[in-house]
Length: 127
Image (cartoon, rainbow, N blue to C red; front, side, top):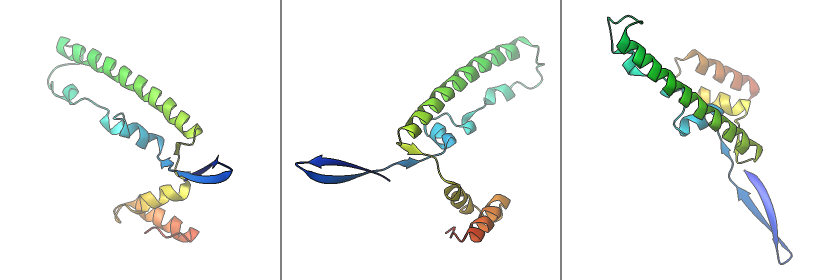
């Protein structure tokens, strides 16, 4: 939370502004441009066609255009994210916050176990 203050008739009024905590990838995903949305199932739907065949070439060209536009939009959103971070509207999670998020995962996952061990060594509760 970011605290700002203003004056009204000589009295100091405190106002708390909520600052969102997001990683860059979470921000991009919230706008519909996360890494998980990358890919095109149509590229796998033409079995038996060699990479030099005409329908495959058309698909590849269309996919390349789509991918270029997608990456351009991601770059614009990255710049917006950096602007919001610099304006203190969004902040990146600290190392401990990232570890706590990871520690809440499934207990069979090695990264979850590692995050829990690190947090325990730091004297932090992961629950």
